[in-house]
Length: 520
Image (cartoon, rainbow, N blue to C red; front, side, top):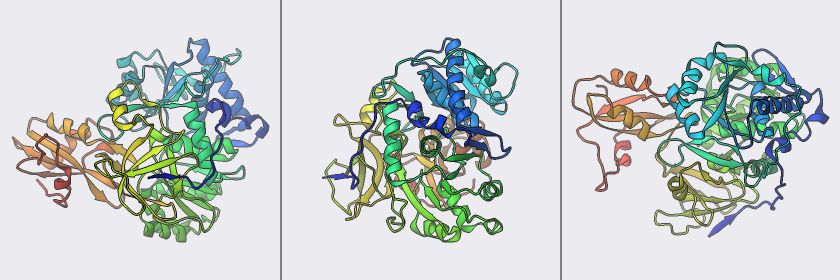
């Protein structure tokens, strides 16, 4: 059966994302749009509105044309919004690069996306410059100054008018985030202007961000959750964002207190800290009225403990990069949230639940969630095989997540079909780590599975078959030198053989059941 949203359908306007998000910016004038948490540097709505046009003009002056791709390799800061929406205003496409990525990660993404320009910060130049050189990036722009890069401020100095390239919201690509999908290496997720505008409207139906809100922006903007649910939703609704370049508990708590934050978007590891860490008692967090958690499952007890300690409303939602990202959310109205669930389907969103054979399931039956709606991606960039495996001919997005729905239409995520490991909300593909491990001369075979960790959600654990002498510490160091920090192996166990099916697939379930790691 098809489960449908309990909310009425909404009309999605035919408008480009930047024009939709910034429609009220000029009227809001001197109101702070973004405040840099560490320094207090402020970008008003009027400055944002004018700056976006200047960035677009500066890019156009350098030959940037409709459909060209700009890589954005920048931590959370006010200028992120200028670069992001300025690129869209130039009819270009933004591909956001994970702040923790290695040179190899960045080069892979920039090459695959065919990026022409790259915007970064001085602290990232040690990775940005070699990656850009490898893939032939035409020009690097840096916030501030750095050898081998053009100051980002140069884009704001042109006196030319912003380009007026026509955008077809339903067809033209706006954002190209990278996701590992259900399996394998990262793939470019093709999201149109219409996909993203639709999801902002859908999310706003149940999450009522308002002009008077002051929102902490600690979730990274390069991630679809931070990009859409934090940055774009807040700017469209006229709220003020206070940005943090990275999460550290005491600075985070200090920012909540100092800026009298009213709404916070978080992930489970942060919820754990807010619920349990003694430092929380040293801060006045009474201004926080609402909190939303996403990106990974969160149990009801922890959700309730956090809400009680902070004295605020708390809701969970669910989504994925391939859905722009939100598909389910609890309403933020008192009395309408069910703790432990990810809420109901958003407007214009349908869901099916199927078993392993594809048979339809009903309420209270666990199966894979399939999603259909205007927020669902067009597909994966230049990857028809991966697209066909995830998005079927009838438009259903196969999420790879296992869950069920109750009689009131509230969904609960209970497990995953996909093999990805979720470390603090980041996706870690086991296949990538297995390939690195197998390249070590002392490793004959390897498999990586998630190990449950209360603080991080999951951490990668490696099972290895050895053909030489090597310690667990050496293997973990070997992997750490070749992957981003969040992908690092956290535990190693030696076994005689990797269990596999007759077709050669690793039997990860068998490995997960082996329990805690051994030391080698």
